[in-house]
Amino acid sequence: MTMLSPLNRGNVWPRRSLPSGLMDDFFSDFDRMVDSLMTSTTTTSVNFTPTCDIRETKEHYWVSFDMPGVKKNDIKVEVNENQLMISGERNQEYKANEDEGFLHHERMYGHFQRTFVLPGTIDSEKIEAHYEDGVLNIALPKTEKAKGRAIQIQSGKGKGLFSKLLGAKSDEEREVRDVKVS
Image 1 (cartoon, rainbow, N blue to C red):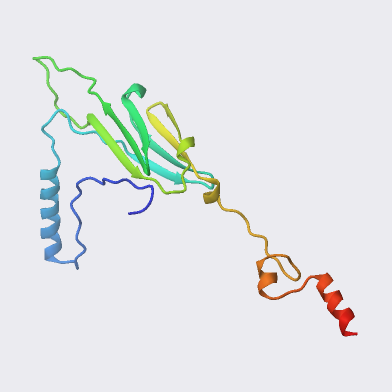
Image 2 (image 1 turned 180 degrees about the vertical axis):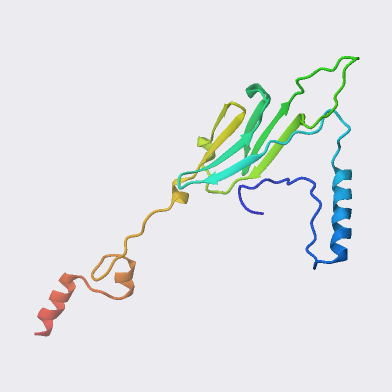
């Protein structure tokens, strides 16, 4: 499992990669039939799962969720140990009367929960969330250690580890040795 990826990917029937031929058509038809059985179209309340994008910059991870029709008060963002949990509910806007009914229904409603595994490089005390126009944005700042730093390349004389390992002597030690030898 990669870091900062959703824990649950949903029920998706795996696709096969077979050589082209008659079996491809059979398996394509079979896959389509199984997919249609796994997708409910008869209920008026199908679970809503907000889609998300995850970006990474030098300073942060940014997670954005599309949540049209969800009120800010119906969203909960939590961090528990190394998990980011986003939950909430999208309520159906339309209340049917006895003499009315849907001719076609595609929008999804209901309770949702998304859980992500956070890398250990996140500063969980500084996580921020912002919701506007149906989009939830979460900023996950990286720790100073995770941001990295530039390493200066040394050459010649130095006082670092390589100077000690390679046995380089300081100028004073060289002068003292030179005086004793002559």
